[in-house]
Image 1 (tube, one colour):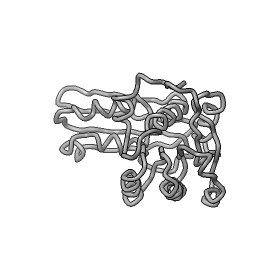
Image 2: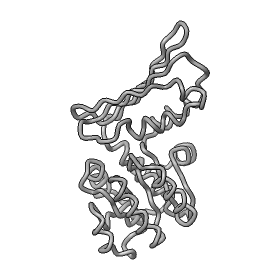
Image 3: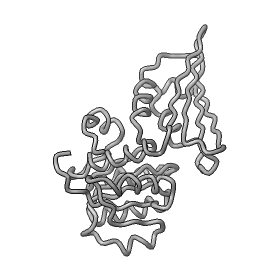
Image 4: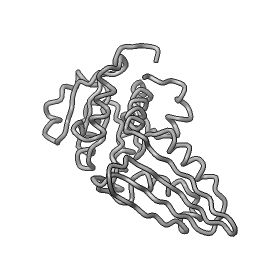
Amino acid sequence: MKSKIPIKTALIGYSGKMGQSLQKLIKPSPFFKLTEKAHKISCFSKWDPKKIQGVIDFSAPELCSEGLKWTLQNKKAFVSGTTALNLKQKQELKKASKIIPVFYSENMSAGIYLFSQWLQSLPDVKQILLEDFHHKDKKDKPSGTALRLKSNLPNFLQKKLKIKSYRKDKKIGTHRITIKMQEEILRIEHEALNREVFSKGALKALHFIINKKKGFYDLKDLYSKYNKIKPF
């Protein structure tokens, strides 16, 4: 990062696990300054637009949508990793990106980006199993990451995919693909060792889009074009 003037950052979902992880990273960072927080819709009316340059959202679908409305009205950058968004809410993100810079991904890690790239190159196989393992408090099944990985498969393979979801213990997030071929079985797995990998990805995403006028961005934009800059 060329300048160490901190980005004035607002956080939606600050009381959740990801919100707490982000606050731990932002507090000592010279690149970001936490200026506003929200954990419910009524918080947005108290936000001061002059104190915010960008918004990071890890919350719930309804809160994410309301946060996007505030961000759009005040012309700020918006980064979200909220999962379980419905089609209309995802369309709202795309529509907003015609006016402001928007970054959205169900998973912010570089490893999932590489995983997704690999899936796009798969040839025809006999059978595919995708398993996602998360902590017992995670509500959406399958996970947003699992659905994103599915979307990265070629269309002819998506029909052969079966997804299984497991919710137990304190597991942060593991995604495993098992591919059955005629005479071979291939497995590849991504495991998040801590939540910082997602928090760092979100902060990188905000730094990436903060000076852009508008546009919709995701992991491909972040890690294929921007990974050399690490504001940590």
